[in-house]
Amino acid sequence: MVSRRVLAFITFFRIFLFIFFSIFLGWDLIKIIHTNNFVLTSIGEHWFLLDKKSIILSQSIVQRYIHYNLWDPIIITIIQIPTFFILFFFLLISLLKKNKKKSKKWFK
Image (cartoon, rainbow, N blue to C red; front, top):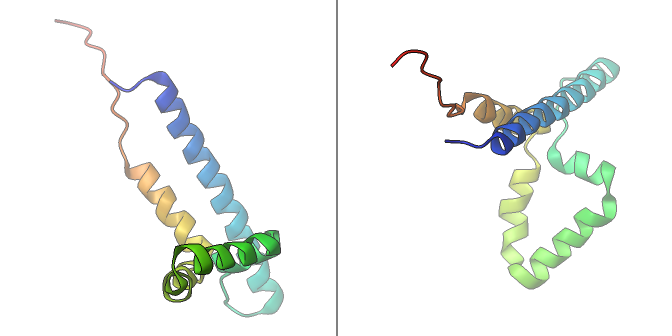
């Protein structure tokens, strides 16, 4: 049986994902209309626009302390994926996952 706190967290997470999905979808739609090009914004571009220092710091930490080849082929590939697709994927998984609610039995 799933507790009410877990169900509340799952509901909050779904709402949070939907809000971010809507914001980044709107961002991309405005960008497409403004530039007359169909270009989706990547995670890395959003990250760079929101906080330049953290992406540079993350790159140096990963290359220096974890593994120098981890950043270039793997993380660069991940942050070049459009934000729209990543959020849509997580939102879809979140919505398809069924909540295990215990149904009330009215009659025995």
